[in-house]
Length: 154
Image (cartoon, rainbow, N blue to C red; front, side, top):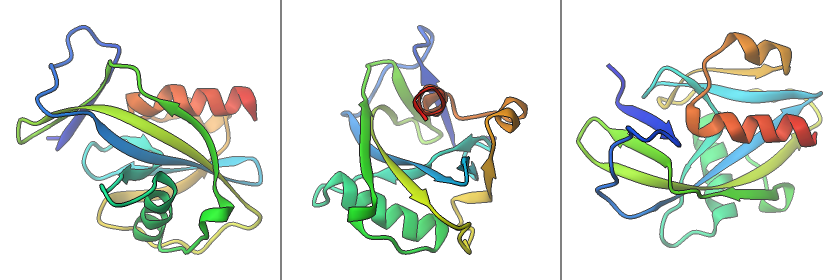
């Protein structure tokens, strides 16, 4: 059973029980391919990232999340802020009953070489995908439009 269920624009989504949650996610690319993680909490593929702590800038949170989830170190200056996604229908419902409205700040990170990565407890698998390969996997619904926007603008 998944620990979290994600919704985007679904009229049947549960109503938020918590305040809006600020997250940071990254479009990490190398040689034209996009890095995704198969999440442990939902068994779906998504962008690397997570919640922004109240004392962090969004870019600091992204550097931290990349280190925690991939085991690689980057500098804030390597990140490029791409866009924010904050429409009200972007929802995460957790097994404990908490339901969050999500506001996501997306950063871009282009890597010249495929990095040595370590899988964290938050992931089951890390993999770079071509656009064509994405058709065969289930992407977290709250990341589908972000991934689609990246491929349109890449």
